[in-house]
Every structure is written in C-alpha cells, then in structure tokens.
Amino acid sequence: MTQAELERLKELEAKATKGEWSSCGMLPANGEAHICSEADTVDHEILGMYISHNNAAFIAAARNALPELIKEIEQLRNAMAAQDDRERKAGEKCAEFVEAHGCDWPDAMADLVTSLREKAIQQHVEIERLTEENGELKQRKELDDFANELAEKRVDVLEKALREIQAEVFDEDCEHALKCTDIARKALEAK
Image: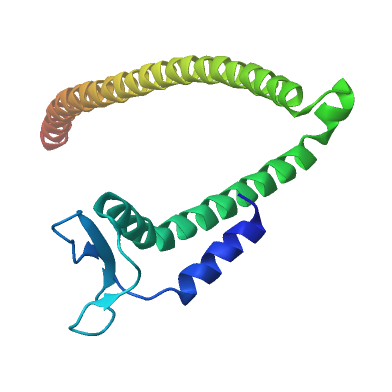
C-alpha cells in the first residue's frame, strides 16, 4: 500500500459516520440488512441500502477496524524508518569494513561479529589469567599475614621470656646484693 493510498483511506475514514457500525434491520423474507451506526443519537442511523447480512457484518467490521489498521500501518512504517536510520548509522560506523571488503552490509557485519567474538575470547582469557593471578596474590597475602602473626607471637613470647629472665636475674642480683651489703655492714661494725 502506497502512502497516497493510506492517506486516501485516512480521508475516507475521517469523513465516514463516527461510532461503532453494525449490521441491523434484517428483513425476514430475504435476510438482507442495513448497516447502522449509533452516532451520538439513540436512534440508529441507517447508512445504506439493503445488502446481505454477511456483507453488512463484514462492512461494519471493516469500518470499525480501519482506524486501528491505519494506526498500525503508520506505527510499522515509523518503526521501519527508525530501523533503517539505525542501520544507516551503524553502516557509517562500520564503513571501513564495507570499504575493506568491497562488499555489502551483511559481509561487513559478519566480519565485525567475528572480530568482536575474537576480542571477547581474548578478554575472557585475560580475565581468567587475572583471576588466577589475583587468587595467587590473595594466597601470598594470606601467607604473609600468617607469617606476620607468627612473628608477632614469637616477639611476644620472647619479650615475656626476657622479662621473666630479667626478673629472676634481678631477684638473684638483689639477693646477692643484700648478702654483700650485710657482709659489708658486718665488716664495718666489726672494725
């Protein structure tokens, strides 16, 4: 359907009686009916001559569906135009592929996808390598932390032992010093 044909349908739809149409007023003798509308009135407006009930039902359904069909066609055309624009812009971005291959858009896109796939694989390998390296660094840090903790405990144990030894030596020295002092005092008193 051309744009002119679509515009013609829109014009016809705009000029037609508004509201829901239906098949009505069937003649019992031959089964013919009128097409009616409830256009802002309580009374049915008779829109045409007698036709078969099936044709009247079809015309009413087509009339009722036409606004939505026109809207759908316009939305689809707008979506297609937007997609064409996106593809054009993508084509401009990928122009070096098209020029390099002297070929059409699908070949250029296939090369781009292949190139991106290869980059993704390389990045995946690099991520795995970095993850492994990070794990090794974590293990080294854990070992360093453990070694530092042990060293701190050793220092604490050595400091405690040194204090105990100093206390014993001091006690012994004090005892010895007191004995010496007693001896010296006794010697002085004796003189």
